[in-house]
Image 1 (cartoon, rainbow, N blue to C red):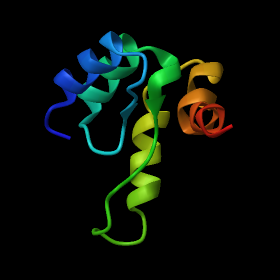
Image 2: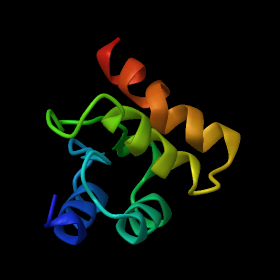
Image 3: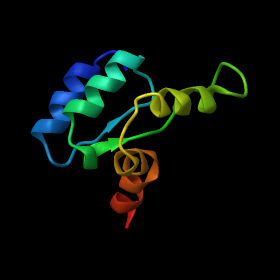
Image 4: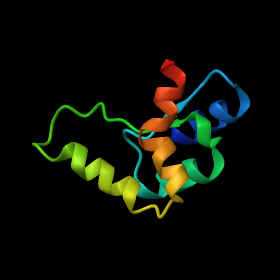
Amino acid sequence: MHLWRQATEAARAHENLCVTLCGPHPAALRHICGVAPLERILWGSDHVFGGADVLGYRKRMIDALDLSPAAHAAIMGGDIWRLLR
């Protein structure tokens, strides 16, 4: 996701948009999690190459952000479950 700044601003401006954390670098992840509405941040991965631990690698990037337990739980699954209900 090379347009992470634009995606973050779009999620801030429009209640029906979410931003996923499936591609940005660590500094972008910190920015997104600090600026975008928490209820519109979703973790995921669209990466299909790179070996068996790509999902673990991306998860560890989120874990390294030092989010509050509530924010971490929301991003790592709570927000998507809320949207799918």
